[in-house]
Image (cartoon, rainbow, N blue to C red; front, side):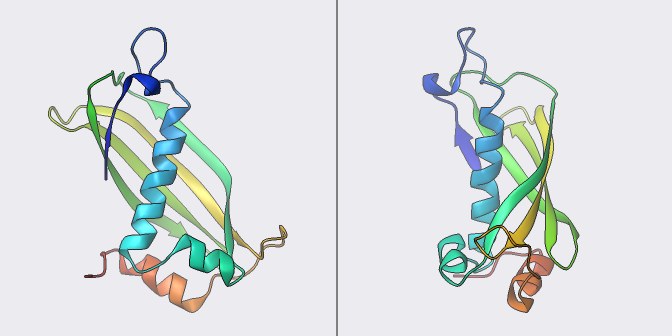
Length: 133
């Protein structure tokens, strides 16, 4: 997934505001799921809501206004009710690593009660490869 950095993404020094990377991770996770045939909205309507229970971000190099970032996302760990996404953000043209991070998500019933991942969700996450459209 790619993200173009606009002025609104930066702090007063023209560097991407640190918390924005969590937003970019969220977009990348949503795209990852959609590419594998999983709609977050449909899952919510069916009674499965994913919540972030842990997140980490390690800042390697600043991204600036005008940069285009490439975000690589993979699932690195899965249990009966949770899974972890790992993200690597690079500046598209140079390949310079900007940020590395991860987020662990738990499946809930929408009321905060943890539930097992549906078999179809597990299969899609384990596939690793996007489904053709």
